Length: 345
Image (cartoon, rainbow, N blue to C red; front, side):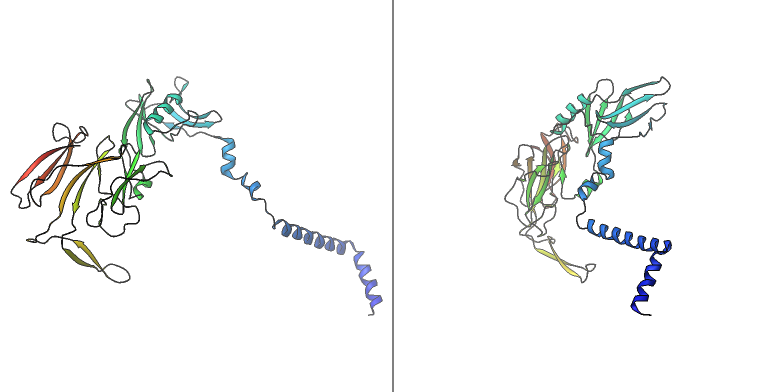
């Protein structure tokens, strides 16, 4: 077939409706693929982000409620968020009544006082509640702090500090009872900072710490990072105490960690053997995290004495009575003398 005959044949084929449709689909899909490839060059991520579930949820607030029945009653409560804020509502189906659980203004004022930061009445930080005291009060938790709210007076009372899973993982932090301050050790010295402020400044409480004479819970030589401090807090207080040991003159003892990977390692620590001259020297220190002050107790009486068995109390051996006194036991090295002492903090 010559060229002229071939062109006539192509012209006749393109006049067929079926062939024309196939060619149209081919051209259309090619153009669509080209357009899609072109759009891939400059995707509009900002526009797409506006329609994510998190962004849309901010505009819609709550669109449903979860009913929480109160034990041994016909009443229930629910939490609902709209453009007027977050609200907890108590419902009595028998009486056909409903009423707010919280006075959000009084709640925000009380939390601001307890936690030392402002709270907006429109943004109730409470996520869940528990009815207590024959349904005359509710318990709730903010961060690691547990509070009680009186339904009749709107009074807020601090109850206790709760260790959350997040804080259990932050092993270097030692929280004050009200979770306002965090104390930790670094370079074998003691530091304090605000607990909830991510940009909080570290305030150094001591400067004389060193290895084997440390304020840290461990005397290892990993000193450049934050580690847990050897501290104990007074109950409901910003005061704390440390029983510090000076083991710099104590002889070394070695053990082999056979479970270490990939090979066993040699570990060194201080340990006085019976009859050796040098033993740990004990000191008792008091600190105030809020005022950033420190004082060393005048507890020395015998050479090479030990301090232990500490108890907090006021006027007697009672846990958490006051934070003005700390009762502790000191004993002589030969165990022939032992005394119960009270230290003025």
